[in-house]
Length: 92
Image (cartoon, rainbow, N blue to C red; front, side, top):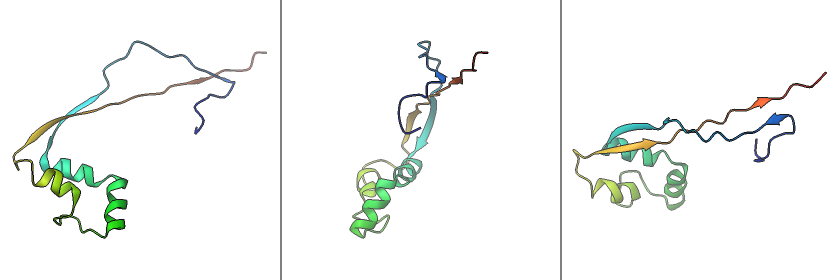
């Protein structure tokens, strides 16, 4: 739903007991660069500025490629959230 409000026939209750669902993963320099290049903002910027991926004007190349060692390994955390709801049944 676009609207953050639920329809009247749904029950909403926030559960405070948060379980650890986050995904932790090691990521290499090349994986990080691929991830950043998958962002739509990157694609739009590159197209708008007419920049070729991997060129000296590529912001990912400038930010990561030229400043991070090739054998770099980083630790990432991918947050995971679940939204569960139950539709109320009509009372008879």
